[in-house]
Amino acid sequence: MSTCVSSPSLAVPSPAPASTIFRRRILRGASTPLAVPPPLSRHAFPLRAAANDSNSTEQLTAESAVERSEADKIVDGMDFGELCNEFECISSPLVESTARQLARDILQLRQGDRSLGNFAVFVKYKDPIRKFTGREKYKRQLWATSALDNPTTSVQEMVMMSTSVLNIKWTIRGKPKSLVAAIGGDLIIKVDSQFTLNQISGQVIEHEERWDVSSSSAISQAFFWASRYLFASAEAGKDLADSVSSLTGRVSTEKQNLEMFPDPSGDPTKVILSR
Image (cartoon, rainbow, N blue to C red; front, side):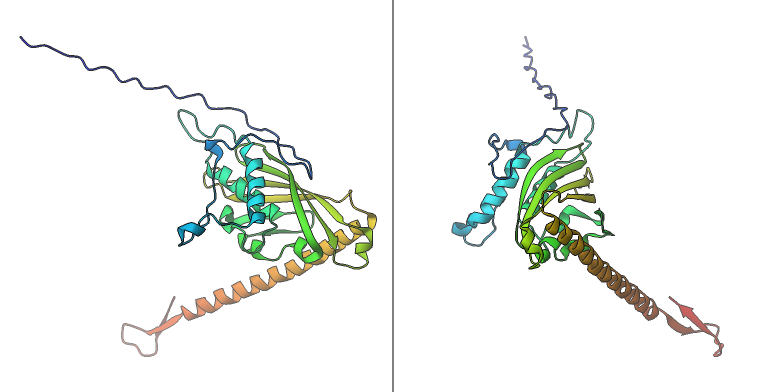
């Protein structure tokens, strides 16, 4: 007589509903530290310094640690919307990673060594004076470091307008390098930066900035616009030089690819041009 033993059924937990809140404002004063909860595991992207010696792995300067912490605290309190549901994903965790890096670049006024991988190859930039295409131009010197003495920055607000649009409101302050403009005191620029991100790769495909200098003196405001126009003119000259150099290199390459071959039929008076 045989006995049948039925195996217990496996209980599969149903997926928890995802949050559908698309935006949450994080406000912060210029000098008041942020009051945010400890970083959650789903928003934690810790940075570690790579080194051959295990004892030096966690050695970072105090200044960079503070700046990184401030950027992470701001991003940790943000809601990046519903990235995935039961059927499809409409965005990527890379969007959050890019937001963290953009905040760090702003707080540290990075130039040249900024993480260009966060920008698409043909990213489009636009401000009230200048516009360009291409992430290589982000390697150039920043206007702030060329026009201001010891400029400082602070981030007041970061908002995900949607799963692909990030808005950052931040302030830059510094004394003009011009002796005449320095009489007017510090130049205070309130910047409104909007980044449109690729929802899959997380890369910035469009970057637009707006400026507000109404908190500065009349002399400082005049210096700002004059120096900005001069800076934009110099950058336009560099753009033209790069375009000419690129075009010349392309034409030279095409000429090198032109070769002459005798006619295979044996007629010595005929030649064949081949690319």
